[in-house]
Image 1 (spheres, one colour):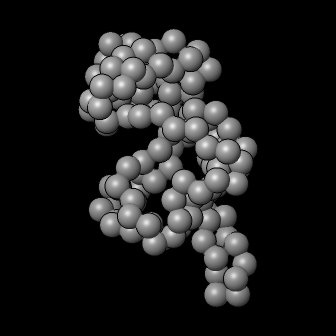
Image 2 (cartoon, helix red, strand yellow):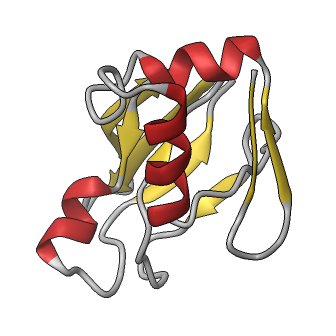
Length: 117
């Protein structure tokens, strides 16, 4: 379990399964627990839970943070000109989404991101 106080003063607790997902990610896999806490503070990490089908970000919404899936799966997609859904990514525990949008400085998301499981 990883526990620390966030920049907002929230007590952040990541249980074993969630901690495993974080540590399997390339960004964090080689960090000690103390360095991981520092990194999570640097990224102003906070934890949110979403139900299946819930929207994390709709196409056109402002987007300034990337996400790391702790449990379940999220999908990023857009609708083509025929209204058909095109899945761009299906991200499982330990995977990230939105990092390329942040890196490129995109102000608005060109895709929608929904909780799949």
